[in-house]
Length: 219
Ligand code: C5P
Image 1 (tube, rainbow, N blue to C red):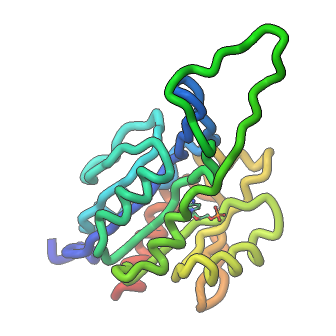
Image 2: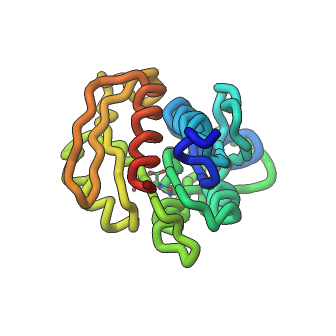
């Protein structure tokens, strides 16, 4: 046990998509599988950390050795994540929906013959990473992700500052990369120290390397 570098440390990880209801049967979501976030939660636990994983709706199993809290919406994810603070480590991997339906309704919206489709009014969701990065109980190490389709490095750097993160794991999720929903990932690690480019790796390998890096940074 004394060999585990994250023994005695606590971590909060978000993973998966969020589902934002339109009505009781419909929702807005995205293609996140939760694979990368779940793998990171498991890797931190293997290094000895006490890990809470806040997961949006996914089809993959809860990772071993981790306390998993299941949520649906961004608001629920924010509440679950911030309720676990203080923590030493936060890794916000979830692909949180940027918007939710401004006034979702309790009854199924019915299709009316001859009528125009209903308009969907959206409103902005809370930013969980940004909230945690500026929180009065801010974790010692705050890690965010940046899924971009262009200008990955510059967008990652901007995100580091804006979100109050210590590290941004940036990846190119352009169609054709197969990253979103896939099993492999190619990332750049962006921090105040500079940019480190990792090769194309299985998401589980990215998770192990990231957990090692987190352990090294925490000392
Ligand atoms: O701003 P953008 O969505 O590109 O930032 C991505 C990072 O911010 C990821 O770490 C993601 O988990 C986090 N995020 C969040 N809450 C949001 C939007 C993004 O935690 N509402």
